[in-house]
Image (cartoon, rainbow, N blue to C red):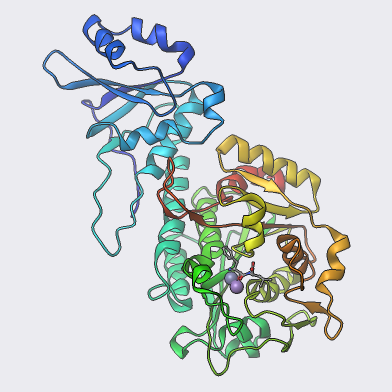
Length: 461
Ligand code: BES
Ligand code: MN
Ligand code: ZN
């Protein structure tokens, strides 16, 4: 489902964004009947509070939406945009407010109107918004539509979003974007092309769900940026099988792939001056007679050997081969995004996207962008002293250190072993556990908007 602004419309209902400090002045400027109505309703400009004001004939002629105090706004994001779900049906036009508030509200409005309607018709959002004046509408539209692509990909169950369908979605995206080309390596060709760990993790799946390496490229000038996304279309845990309670959500284990595809769409539609490459190892971590086993030792594309101590630590394996390929081209920056560890969730919960980088400047740029665009991230350390934990002895690396302490960090350190370019790694959750403003329950992108905002600083564009 693709959200969009309503066409410009003379009859759209004017909507005023109101800060509590401006409440009195806003009410005083209304005509006496509407002012009396607003006061009797107790409108206080709390975040997301909405009030439709009737004219003399009872039709709605104006709407107020509260922005809340600075303190109240710290408790959430896109709070004003949640009014989109509460205002009466109609087309609205934001006529006043500062540009930053209008931008967040307009983007949030589009994101709030997202519905996953592939399997069942869903009630469409009743309140639509005309593109506001004075803000970068094409940018917001692209961001919202790309985020909704990410959500659709995550929400689609593994029965309809296996490695083949994920590759088809990437090819369809490339087709829709001028200058973007796609290439897919499938099944046993992964062995010939030297992606042994992608093959090992994905080989137990049925033949029509064989593993793949998906590649998209776009752009001819500027610094090279490579995005790598974990595309585990379903994670059973493999032979070290997950308990049912942990497996329940594992259709979302391609959330990293979905997020980098959404981010790629934003970068390409906005024509950022860079050369983009997207790499997605797409596999199903299945259980079968040919499944890779605990204590197997795999030789990676880079030549490092890896002892498997848990087949459920599969994401780092498929990413490692993709990161090695990415590094061979010496790009200016590699960013990986992956639903990599449960430990990241324990550390920061579902709402914050932890990221790792050795570059303090990049970390500062990302944190600043995250705050600016309401896409929260938090830096965790590549703590080098923990390297010993990923070194088992029989092989160069251990995919699942015993003890499980600092699991998000040891997973990140594992990935870093395969990278020789400037590097940022995101360990995302990709799922909204309960509905929040602009984020219905279900698949959700994390970090993409922060990265998009930070790219000029990260790549000196
Ligand atoms: N896909 C999971 C991580 C995950 C689980 C992300 C739940 C979000 C929610 C990953 O493949 C995994 O199973 N990781 C293991 C690694 C462990 C075996 C070293 C984990 O985190 O438990
Ligand atoms: Mn796993
Ligand atoms: Zn996984």
